[in-house]
Image (tube, rainbow, N blue to C red):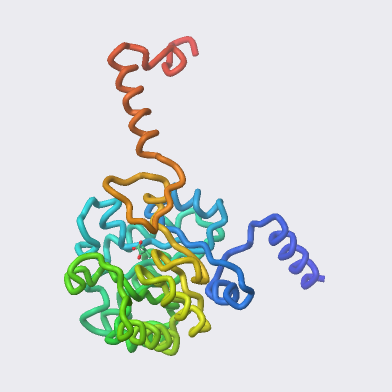
Length: 287
Ligand code: KIV
C-alpha cells in the first residue's frame, strides 16, 4: 500500500512539473535521443530563477562573471571564493535546471589535489552539481581525479578564456589541419578521462561538427556553429545588458540596456520635477 502511494505521489509530481530536476544522466541521454541541450549562464538568484522557470537545462555559473558582473577585462582575476559565492546565490530557488559551476583560473592548474579540493568546495559550499574546467592535454588526469571523487566534470575546449595570454587575445582556435587533429583527439581524450559533456568555444563549425560526431558525450557550443548537441550563451549578452561591441556568435533577444537607461532617466526626471513619489507611493496616518 505504501509502495503504491509512493508511486502515485511520484508520478503526480512529475505531471505537475515539480520534480523534473535535470541530472547528469538526463543531459547525456539528450544526445542519444537527438534532443538539443539549452545552457545559459546566471550569477544571482533572481536571474537563475527566471532561467530555471523558462525551462533551461543547465545553468552555468561561468567565470565570465569576472567580465559581466565584476567589470574586469578578463576572467583571470576571478577567485574560487567568488565562484562559491555566486554559485550559492544561483542555487537558491532552482527547481529543475542542473547547476554547473566554473573552476576559475589557478583553482585547478597547480595540482590535482588542489583541483579536487576546490571542485569539492563548489559542490559542498556553493551547491553546484557539476564543475567545468578549461581543458588542454595537461588536465586530462585532473578530470579523472575530480570524477573519482564523485564530482561530474564538464570539459571546455577550443577558445579557453583562461589562456588569454597564451592565445594573445580571444582568437578563434582550430583553423588549420594540425589544430583540427589536435582538438578531435583532445575531445576524445576528455571523454575517456570521464567528462560528461564538452563546451566547444570559438572554433569553426566544421570542426565542431566533426568533434560532435566523434564523441558520445554531448557537445555544447558557443561560437562553434549549429552542429553541436546544445548551445550556451552568457545571459547578459542575450538580454543586451553589456557595454561594447558583441562578437558575431551572440544573438541579442532584447535590449535591457536601452530599457534600463530609459527607466533611470524617467525616474530622474520624476524626482527632479516632484512627480515621484506620488500619493500612491506614500504612507499616511490614514492608510
Ligand atoms: O564563463 C562562461 O560563461 C563560459 C561560457 C562562455 C561557456 O565559460
